[in-house]
Image (cartoon, rainbow, N blue to C red):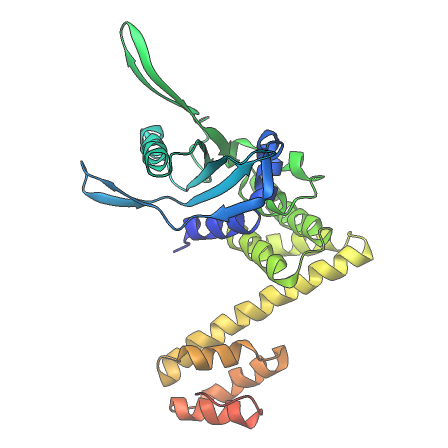
Length: 300
């Protein structure tokens, strides 16, 4: 099962300012970027349902040119939920009560369907008056056209295009364009891996789509094509590693995290050698012996 909330939280935490710049540039205009801090996870208990909820992401930032702060609460909603605005308002009220700071609430609707436009307002009304109107920012990905983000040199655009409104026939091209955009950004390897992994998670291609994907990459200019091919090669190696790990777990039993870490450091050639060697393993000691034969550090 894909942990959608974890993936989105990791993406937005890493590229928080870039996310605001892409979708809420007006907020960027009045916050002080250097003041950004993330709060510990916030847990809220629904006393009526007896359930506990965790706010996805809460950041504290200072108003530019001032000494006062405000909170930005970003919630990823990966499935349709009736009366979602009510739950978001409860989060808002409890954050405001706890910290005594203004709260800027944002929700990312990341599910594929339905495509019905979502509201950005939660109201409490009576026949004669509106008691309360709660407004929140909305990014509904299945309402956005990926083509509108092709020229956005923004890492969040590179990732989230994979979850926007995509015709089935466009899936290979969108995946290629996500990586083309990523290749222009000159990010460090860890950030490159985060975005490329996000894209690969949400745009898994079949064999026919893979052929189209490769043909799209072949049309890139040489420098970008080289970067993209490195990403694709890393995907292939990771996929091969996952297969080898499953085979090892069946052959010798559960592999310890320490041994798995050593396996993750193997070169592509060594991974293939391990895939052949494990056929003769009978226990985890055989795996340790094989790894030690490569000169890798012994398990402690």
